[in-house]
Length: 293
Image 1 (cartoon, rainbow, N blue to C red):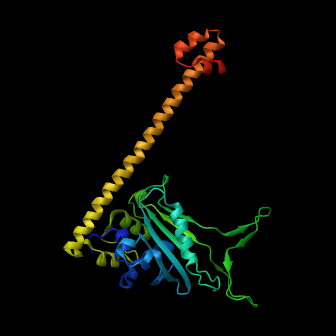
Image 2: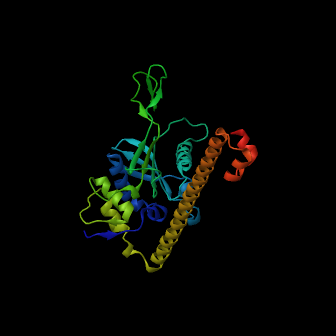
Image 3: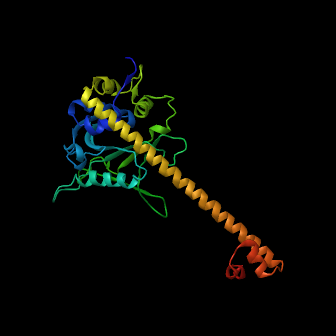
């Protein structure tokens, strides 16, 4: 297989990977992420999975089977905004609450939140982060009560199942493109929209075959290219706003530093017995402020 340029994955999530025929791509991606065998069963009915194109978000909720047994809910979402941690929490909360029907039992399926962001969020080195909680921790002894539920209460109880969400955060732009594992092949693809010859990660061959840009109809390809152009403009505007904000902060810091330096000079002059009027003329500080020094 030669190197293939594919449709950006967030665009595919929004418009193409909701088709059951493409679940093998998502199954492969999630299998490589978790290091377990993940098989996507169905798309879940939720606000994120509306059929109307204008209502769709860069998010998809799925039900999947892990290692042939455990049933779990996966919430996959892409974000290009700076502020989205609240949206991650909201998405997980929705994925949990939508499992409960009126008067039903709280038989919660574990939710795996997979968020992909194209800015570094303050990260310095890594490109893959995991957040999870083991359970309630005793404040005095450190004893842990796991976040788990059992299917039966009569002895012997069935094995407890961990139900607390796990959060995966992927930052493709932090990746140095030095591929060291099969999941790195996916990170490379998320960053560059390219499936390189020789990549063998689960789902990538299917992605190369089904998401190949050259296979798009000309009219759809033009729409897609306009989306990429608009995204580049949005990213430029966002980056400019961030840089302007940083420069404004630096300028404010410089101004505050100058003001503090002047106050220190005035304080030293006052301690040395210099006339208040002379200090005011020399430093430009109001006499009231000098008197308080």
